[in-house]
Image (tube, rainbow, N blue to C red; front, side, top):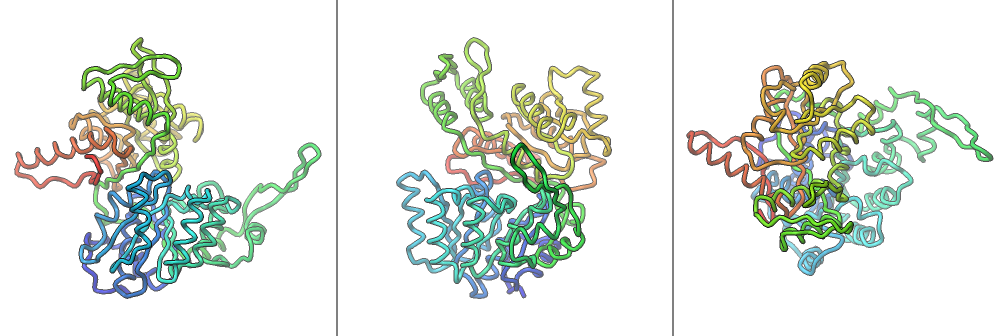
Length: 489
């Protein structure tokens, strides 16, 4: 049962149900659709267990694009103020100051310690060693949770084996994901094994596979192998999963706010860091190809810096050259976890074309369409018509806010991703309301892609400041919008 806790943010009904069903369980899954607030449920779980004297430590594991968000947004926003706590973030290539912060976990602390690690770290010796040390030291009075638990769906992966093993050293275990099955029913096995051996009632993956997969022997050259060609007994599997996890969809959460905002942090590549720093300090960047991109004026420099963050750069002779980036992969990961239709907004023509091409290659031809300056009037009408048709295979609308952000109705989408923003508050507000207008029957989730300590954060801070100033002038309460705690706002 829950304790008499002073919540920092009032839980919604479905969040209360999830907490009450899980709190007295040592192992449990929150299979809650993206945008329903599963992060808050985990934080409330940690807070409750701490106040009950059950734990004094929590290890939160999440993908690179997500784990920074726990430190910058989720924990500061939802952890009760009267609970003494410290948050320590793992950084693989840590600076001297970051290393000192990581090492501070070994120092006594009279309160709750929350240690946040990226799941990718467990694929390497350094991260594995750190995780095992933490599990042995703090596990008996600790909780370990994996956000986006499909990152351990492959039972053969090194990080999966490592995390499943160390999880058993923790007193409490939790997994979080909106879509536990992304490719096949086989995905749930390793996630549930993280909760504990035989969670689904099987001694091994192969026993699990034998129960639910239809296998066929194949031959390729001189080799033969077993291949999954179908599935069976899925009602039985669903019943087993229901015993250890809580599932809820946004359409079932009648008390959710109309708009929810979050950020997805995107780590810069080595090439991006190099070019970005050159442009920022020297106002020009000399690319490996020998091309020069200069930006002597501040406005142009900000534009070039943002281009680098998005994965390309325009040279002085007008050519657009690609820059290795993780941003497109972040979009693909978000959409893999989303069942319905979505809008992706981008500031630059190059990005819109690249995103559309990648989505059609990943999700099938015709699954994505673009809407920007080069789109003809006839094509524009067809894109909107097909996107608004629930039965049409067009799932992803990729557009430029300055072109497509006005007048359109795109209410079939309940997920909106900002690949990049401009400094225009008008463009931002108008583009948000393409999905959130009369005809929308579901809450809408807005996700901003952010690279830490870059112009991304400056743009978000600028937009938020404009919103607050406007509210003051109009004597209104500033609406809830994306809240970040950047190091260099």
